[in-house]
Picture (cartoon, protein in one colour):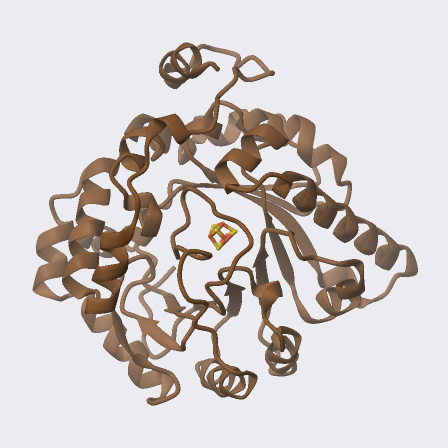
Length: 377
Ligand code: SF4
């Protein structure tokens, strides 16, 4: 990905902070704060600003986007503009009646699943029944895509997949996604494993020590070894994507090597544009200033002396979380700092129980020594 000039390559818009789930790693703290979502009229104004940037894709996220009345009107406008559109959902609210619009307006629907069993998924996602609802959503999507393909209609552009946020509790069980979960959905297009980012609730004391991946685990997730191991297990029709999330760190060395995700604009629920996608701090609101002006302002933050000084020494996941806390505190508004101060710490006693993987790894892996016996319920 090249350094952006006048426009972001992709835009992520958290359209609401309302959410029926309470995930332990939630970067946006959704469900625990005001929804902050805009009226439909203002959402459509923001939509026009985003379209004016002509990004390669727009992602509607949250919170739970399917809670937002008018979501499909926003999607309709983006679709009319010819910009590929993604939806990120827990699947909790996905209903059969939505399927025609989802297949018509969106290019990708990502359903979040953090465990291949109800026990693990529901514990990470913070709500009993969330696994069942996610699988129901995947089943509905699978059926709709199969029917559309049978009819030979234009829905062949549409893809849906599973996104897994990788934390220590599910790291030793990623194989189950490939062997148990993915095969249940013959039309599934992709399966994504992305390391939890130290952002929002994932920067909390306790979470970093007990759930943020170790450096060794994060390295494995981004390695050829990890890719080859999981690729051998996943159905051949499913595209496997793995990431240690470090591209979002905005480390000066990543800029130098061209691996920083400096192409992503992040829009908050009230239309404010973040200076950097995963850290607190905004550069203005799309209802008040043109998107192109805000994007240029956001890019300038990368060379801010405090940002460089804070991120340059970062080497480990723990360093990253500490840097994130410093940046959030420095650039966050008074309201943001008050919200951060109210966050409850994360205690290991509330961590999801971890069982041994049902599939044996071909060779012993170092993380298993750490996670299996000590956290067995
Ligand atoms: S991670 Fe997503 S599904 Fe979970 S609480 Fe946050 S917004 Fe809701």
